[in-house]
Image 1 (cartoon, rainbow, N blue to C red):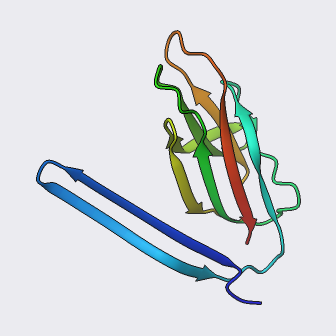
Image 2: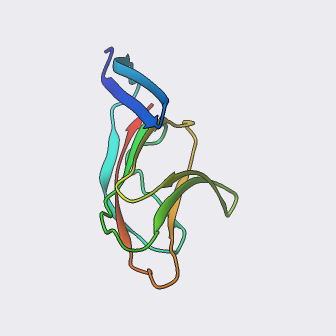
Length: 131
C-alpha cells in the first residue's frame, strides 16, 4: 500500500507590519503497519501515560486541547518518558491543536498545568497512527 496518511497543515501570523506563513497541503505518507489510536481523555495535573492500544510503532500524531473556557490559564503539556520522568516537548493552550511526526518507540505522557484558582480537568482529543 502507499499514501495511507495525508497531512495538511498551515500556520500564519500577522502582528503589526510583520507577517509570516507556511502551508503544506496534501502531503502523502506511507504507513507500514495498519493501526491507529484515537479518543478523548480527561487531563488532570497527574502525569498520565497515553494508551496507544494496537499502535506498537508510533507514526504521526495530532493533539487538540478541547478546553474553550476563557477564564484561567490551564494548558496541556505533552512529552515523552525517559525512565519514569516526563520530558515535555509540546504545550497546548485553550483550543490549540498540534500535528507532528513521532519517534516510533516513544511513550507519550501528558498533564495539565493550572493557574491558581483554575484546577478543573480539561479534555484532550488525540489521534496517533502506526508508523
